[in-house]
Image (cartoon, rainbow, N blue to C red; front, side):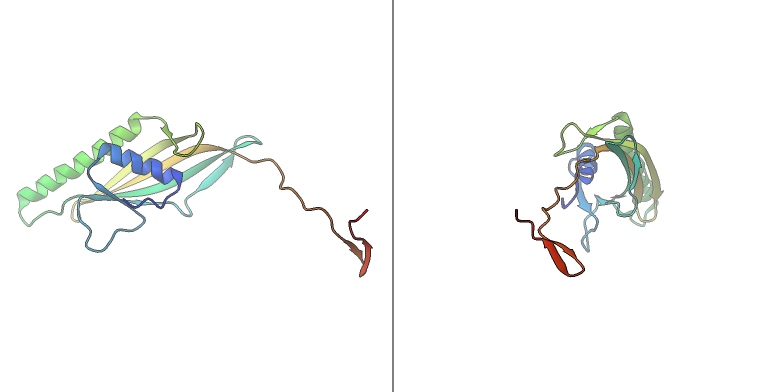
Length: 167
């Protein structure tokens, strides 16, 4: 498992690892000649939106894309049916688990939760891949403190030093 992730990604990894504990999970990239079954989580870059709730709190919404790579079918029709059933099982297991739990604790945060609002899935039977889209939402505090300003060391007017900050 490749966990160079932010805390929201860790929540998605934990969800998948809970439902499918023995399946490998990759993040943002899979190695060449990877072994199936596995999952790939693509972290959002530009799919993040924010909305102000109050002066001190804002809401962040992200879209994660998760690919489930099931075993590839052989040329025989019976194996294609088996793979199709496995894909349906993967899809329903993950969606049922995610939609059954309203909030997920975010690791490394103080009582903060990630809410999965929408999960959708599209299956590609030819390549034995199911694409999941997770829309997540969380509420974050805004730091309203202004950064500490440095003391004024010099005041210059028209090239002439008016004061050097010493009393």
